Image 1 (cartoon, rainbow, N blue to C red):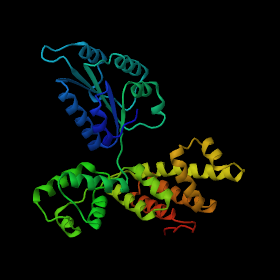
Image 2 (cartoon, rainbow, N blue to C red):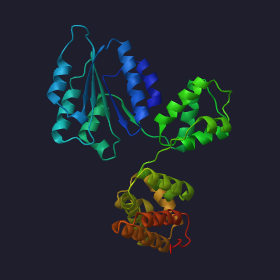
Image 3 (cartoon, one colour):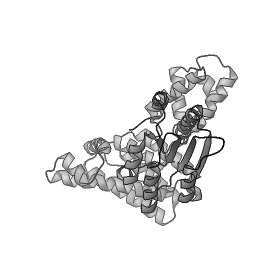
Image 4 (spheres, one colour):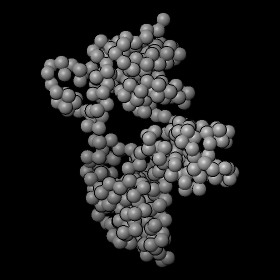
Amino acid sequence: MRLYPEQIAKQIKAGLAPCYFVYGDEPLLKQEALDELRQAARAQGFDERHKFDADEGLDWDAIFDASQSLSLFSSRQIIELTLPDKLDRTASDRLKELLGQCHQDLLLLISGPRLNQQQQKTAWYKALAAAGPVVPVFTPDARQLARWLEQRLGRHGLAAEPDALHWLTLAFEGNLLAAAGEIEKLALLELPQPLTLATLQQQVQPHYHFNPFQLIDPLLQGKVKRGCRILLQLRQEGVEAGMLCHLLAKELNTLHGLQAALATGQSFPQAAGSLQIWSSRQPLMQSALSRLPAPKLSALSTLLAAADAAVAEFDDDTAWRWLYALCVGFFDEKPPIILP
């Protein structure tokens, strides 16, 4: 059963499941989900806790010893296990064996990184999903972030005017941990309510953060202003231009492949299926193709080749200039700007 973080409180009222798997790339939401489960478990007598972390190496024998031992001071225990990015065959088999030992006095709290669709088809993931709720935690997009910030402010007795709330979403996009800390500070200041834009700009230091993968979707959607903002922030955060060239090359190659398949008379679903494009990404690709004809895609590939050549020559400034021109070029079918 899939369970989202905001649904945990309702689910545990009906009783704790024997196992929970919390996974994703948002550290604050992951930590709070695990804390909520720990608190519920303590309230139900799970007083003993053993923690095992993949970063320190997984000693499966020690995990099994802990799961089978009983303390003199507690008859109920929690086994916490942090999984690595990948599980080999042995680890997968041992995990499935551990899941088979679940009982009412043993709670397994398992956490892991963000998983792609292929990983969610593995035997070990399916075993986790069968043993108890799986709880994905993802960084909210701009629309979801506004709702999250509004709820977070309300939790601390605060409210914000619409323009102030919009500013907060820009100031903390991709960094919920910093947003939570700033909101706690605001609650201590006893400021007039609702919070105004001027008040927030005076009291709050922006801490937004992006990862390279967040650059792709705005470009496919034609949201060039947002894409360029992300690109400039990625450079400021020290992301390598070569890494972005690799990601963008993959997307452009996919668009070229789709366009070639459509030219042969295939339908879009057929073309997307043959290229193994996830169903969730197909609308983005279709939107981009409707805006970017073949000559424009070829021109964008030329810009990318220029950026890649600058990377090979260790000319970082020129590489970033070409990448910026490439991002702008995703806006419409007009020929892109060629840098001097």
